[in-house]
Structures are given as C-alpha cells and as structure tokens.
Length: 168
Image 1 (cartoon, rainbow, N blue to C red):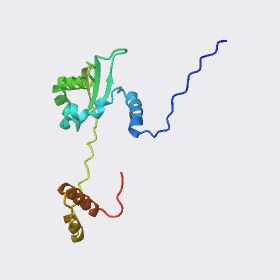
Image 2: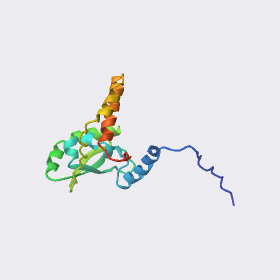
Image 3: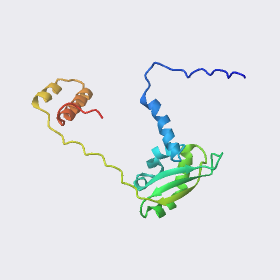
Image 4: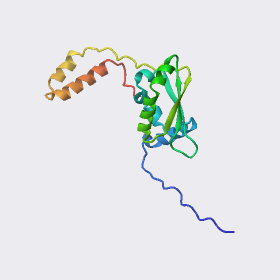
C-alpha cells in the first residue's frame, strides 16, 4: 500500500494578530450561510440605496446561477408601502450593486414585504459642564492654540462623566 505524502502543517506565527484579520473570515462564513458571498452589499447598503430607503429595507440574499458569476437575483426585504417606490429605482440599485461588485452579478431584484426594525438612534451627547476656574487657568498657559483646544475638549468630556472612563 502506497504511503500518502505528508503535508506540512500550516505555518504558525508567535506574533499577535489583530482582530480585524480574524473577523472577515468569521463574518464571511456567516454571510455565505445566508446567501451572501459578498458581504460588501450588506455593509454598504446605505450607500447603494440611500439613507431614506435603507431605513425601510435590507438585502437578504444574492442568488447566482450555479457556476456563474453573473445574472443573479438580489432579494430585498422591504417594509410597508416602500416596495413600489423601490421598484421604480430598481435599475439604479442593480447598476450600483454591479459597480460595487465589479461585474454584472445582479440581473434583477426581487422584493419581499417584511417588518424592518428601525435603526437604533445614537444617544444624545451629554450636556456641557462648565470647566472649573482652576482648569481654565491651567489651559490659559498653553501657547499652542490647537493643543489648548484639544486639552479643553478633553477636560470638558471628563468633567461631564463621573468615575473612571468606561472603555467600550
């Protein structure tokens, strides 16, 4: 019986790897599971359809014919009465997605009514707290106006919080 040639183990490195190096591989597997081989469509949906349409729609999947990279169907979930409006801009959506992918991957769009949760709104910034006289006097001694503005902004941000800063 013939022996199989040994395959060398993958090269390992002792250097720390950035999370950004690992995430695309994990995210890519999840996107492929839900019908997206190109995660860029989901990531840049607001740029493709605009903020107004993006609030009420989301791409669901891109189905390509077996063995081909063109002539696919982009399935989009749409809420409420936005479907007819989105149907009117269908040629622009196809053109923008194809420009983004660099090929004629999308030939047509299929719309499906769905309940789309509105995007979460960002928390309002904390109210400005006036700086103490002691802090203002220390900032007056700084000659560089850019540095003084940066330090003043930092002092205002720190004075608006209580306790140690929270890293998120």
